Image 1 (cartoon, rainbow, N blue to C red):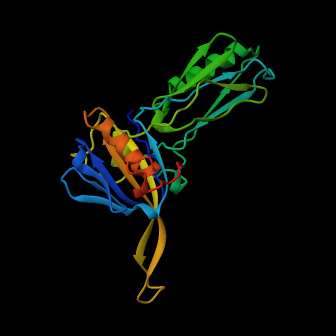
Image 2 (cartoon, helix red, strand yellow):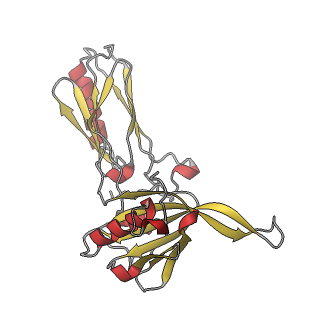
Image 3 (cartoon, rainbow, N blue to C red):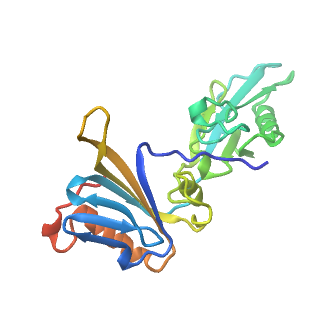
Length: 268
């Protein structure tokens, strides 16, 4: 079964710029204003340097799928008893498209197995592994490991960090710690970018927080100053991306020459 994952969105995103072939003409700091153009050469992000609040830059990574060892050694053995194991993940979308906002329960999987008349930890371990293997709705795998361990591994880093409720007495430890993806095609598509533009090779990413002036009905004839977030994606394997990341970072952190143009905003 194929699974869909909902990428966690940043709130109040004001603009998203995607550059598949970044070049020096696509970014500029002049007269105290930073301008970043889109792939078509039109101004996409224009913000005064004095309105910058903070930024974060991260290179593309596919992330690391979460893998957890559930050690059943310490559970209490009782003959003919039901044991439960529950696994959930924050980013799995249910069949009807609902994710975390809807409180959809598709992402939660509970496995109830029974011990026999001569209960053993090995039996319970094997039963959990078999139950997960037989579940077409499982977005993770399970395997039996030495020492009465059930290893549960997400099929994709896009699922987020697994949350596991194990039988009383069991212990949990990461086999592979979850690392969030950055700049994947799925992330870019989540912000409404056309699939014809988003590239499967992924992007280095800037998150830029800044002030934005906007008209408000609450202030007659005047503008309100609101915090905003702008995203800039640079195709990670393009020849111009390294220079673009360096230049834009210099704009944002105040190391741009001449420094007098702008003293910089802090990293988030």
